[in-house]
Image (cartoon, rainbow, N blue to C red):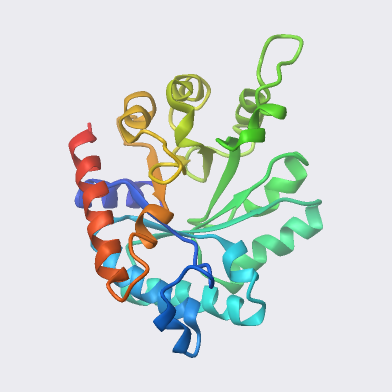
Length: 271
């Protein structure tokens, strides 16, 4: 999906919601355990319920990989299901890959050739040669980890160099030499609040994937206030707050209601 197609979808739907698909076999409704592939059944139901309210899905590979081959089948079939039923959705493989060049090239092949996702999250710690193999695929995106909201993020991301620049700022500045805003996004945690101003100072045009709204306590209003651009420039993700809004047989309806509520808030914040 191109940048303009993504922007058009956001404007058409009045939403910049990304629904995180984190299917935990220990949390999904018990009645789904009778299904041949419970994770796949769960994801299909969530997608059907929330598709009218979001513009993107973010399957988190850890939840699928934890189930071995069955999990990989569920991931692959979920991606195919979204592609067939809801082709306007932007699909992000939240895999956080990043390794030496030849290994990264194979990871890139996995997600951009073997499966049909639009983007993959990539860890930048190993530098340019670990990221570049993911670039250059037509209509595909790298979403680089920049400023996360986990407790340990300050251990490295906020450390300063001799010029006073923080590591996350150097990551963004350096990576912008590798790709433009038409194929590079950045992960920025919703709990960073006013720090979005600092992000926009070094990445004024790039889309930001923003996890942490909802269960993790991030403020949608702050994210929009400090992070939104004329092209919106945001994909705000909610996972647990939507997909586990209920663990009963009404889980899909509850997910739809939670997604609709968040999308309604987003519509009111759009520039």
